[in-house]
Image (tube, rainbow, N blue to C red):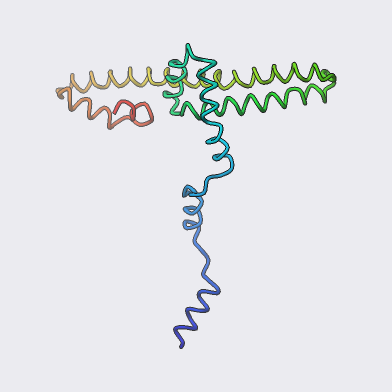
Length: 178
């Protein structure tokens, strides 16, 4: 009887969870997809189709840029559509409130211009990130080869020099080299 009452009281008034327990609960990925994830998955295929239709000649270059930044081509296509839709609504609204685009025709033109700008800007940002990562990889690879040369000149073999050099380095570049 005493044990039952103790369990009842502990069940009705549980102890406070530790900070570590609460933080791990927030760090775990949720099994229930968020609304944004559901929207992204619903427009992923049409966004990818549109991207391939618009950039059919340069899709290999775009895939290369997405791959080096660690992204996904479908996610990039969805981001492009989101940015285009946002700019299509935001640019005419801002110009209307400033007083530069009061007519419906001006709103239509600025909306189309906003759509085009919003559709191109994610590509510009992607190219900038890819160029930065390529430059970083080039610098790390130069250092990697230099360290291998030092290890080999120190009397180590090629295999041990490569293994030692890759274990010394940190970051995404050395992960890619490994």
